[in-house]
Image (cartoon, rainbow, N blue to C red; front, side, top):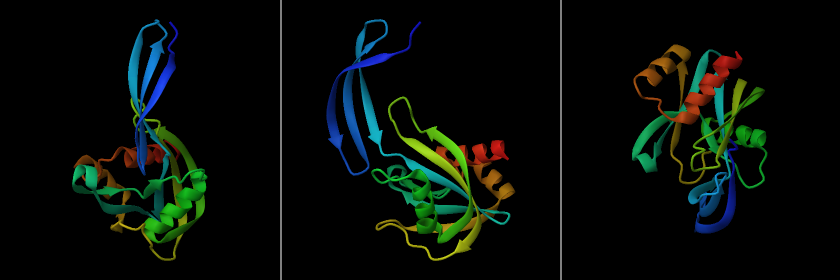
Length: 175
């Protein structure tokens, strides 16, 4: 059986600063027609930053959830921006650190059932502090935790965002 869907028509529903939403009419490989709501996103980066034997986490309020989360440093790609350059920029903006050693950990699709968002994962090591300069409107604080502390935070739900979990897992797999 062939798994394809052909877009017959695409209608823009919303064009925002962070996302665009489309309602597409598609034809399935069976010939049946249906619709798909698609969230278009420029993508982003996630950085597992290691300061010697500590992992850098950031703590910030996440408006959609109305709560504060611990996460790995991360950020949105600007239009046409190289993911590696974005990772370097985001690490310094959110933590104040620059890294001398970088490892590409691959990428993940956040929610392929309705979004095309692709997050590029990196590991940053050999850190040097410069200065922290978060984006306007972003209140963020960096913390250092041991690997065991991070595992406990995952287990007790303090770290629950998918991008952080994926980057930690990919780093563990790649060694």
